[in-house]
Image (cartoon, rainbow, N blue to C red):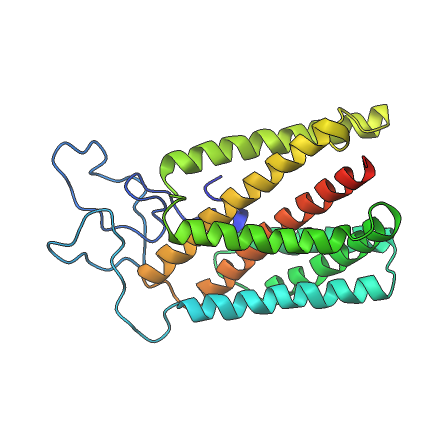
Length: 283
């Protein structure tokens, strides 16, 4: 696994300044054991200007068909907007959990297909957003009406707060996405997913809450870890977007950026929704 989500898995990770999917112009340095960067496979990299500081992504010259921040913002607004609209449809029509699980499976398949494609497919990405929205709306309605009143709105506000906080800390360079950061986050994420899978198996075959990762004090701790991991994934997504713009990725890549950001925000929302429901049920 090379990134915070499958969308960016084919973008390499460099040893100099983070991701190398858009950085193939690292200059040899005396004493640098990584001068020959095995991760440098960027087809979009521009020649580095002589005398330019090392480790700083050179900005690609403006050109038609290149990805810009406006492109990323627009596509992300479209995908997230569709998620919200479809979630509202599921909420107000009181969509059943059975249909919601079906929508989740469809979203999973569409997301998986897009993740393995070499190019962005807006139809697949928007289809994923639509079915994911149906699932989130039905699940949120169920939790809000039967488990913890107001949990959905609290989770939405929390997701917005996490997004804003990570963006501010990333822009201020308080959070620095380096190879070590990536390695630690991915190791933690793999462990988190493995524990989740084991807990699910115990819940299916032994009944109850499995190992207890979804309720009580352990569930709260597990939920906090999930939110922190989501925030770390978000920082890595920001790095991918920054590098893509800096190295002149084609405009179509903005769809992949929007897809990746949407997946990460859905992760954070689901973890916060579960965390809020646990906290309220313990009151």
